[in-house]
Image 1 (cartoon, helix red, strand yellow):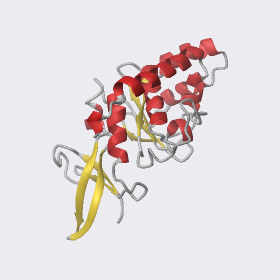
Image 2 (cartoon, helix red, strand yellow):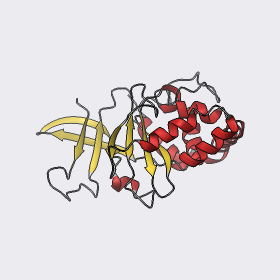
Image 3 (tube, one colour):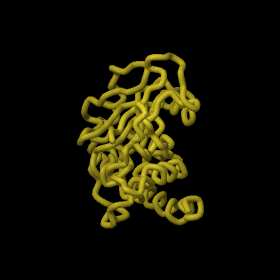
Amino acid sequence: RPAFTVNFDREAPGQTFHGLKKLHLNNSVQDSSYLSEKLSREMFEAAGVPAPRAGHALVTLNDRPLGLYVLIEGVNKQFLKRYFPQTGGNVYDGHSQQDVNQRLRTNSGDAPKDQSRLAALASAARTSDLAARRIALEKTLDVERFLSFVAVEVIVAHWDGYSLNRNNFRIFHDTSTDRMVFIPHGLDQTFQRKNITAMPEMSGLVAKAVLEVPEFRERFRARESQLLTNTFQTEPWV
């Protein structure tokens, strides 16, 4: 059963399906429960992190029943409008051990060849003096959202995401604030590992750089605790 993406308006401009222009159909080959994507995305959303929605669909292709799929909303301007006042900034696609100090593919945005804000974020993360790094990161990164992003990746044990493995992530340049916002992606292997600690070693350059700053590290601990004790109650997901 192939996994595939459907762009409803690529050949027919303006065409939508239930109001959506782009959908991903995940065959959930790495998640027999078919629930990891949906639950994780709801948790990111509850934590204040922009996250594409997920659901389920029975799929038929060319009159051939393919069965149950995980249905995932595409990251495009239509999605971005729910969270940001301006949607023209680039969305960078990160995977396979990539990071912000490398050239990333752009899958949305008005200036797809412009990588300057990625370079600025990489430069901020590499600033050696921690006090200067804090100031530089606050100018290039939506720090509050990023702390929540990392906290949820740890809580759901997203071992194959940005923070822990430099894989499966999106970054949006929010032009209204001129800061970068991380968006979760590829969440079908969450909730599978029990050996991830509350403060694991970070792999992603930005995650590592942020948590090396004492003030950010304390804010991360507080955010993680607040999410675990107050935000993530079991009732909404039962």
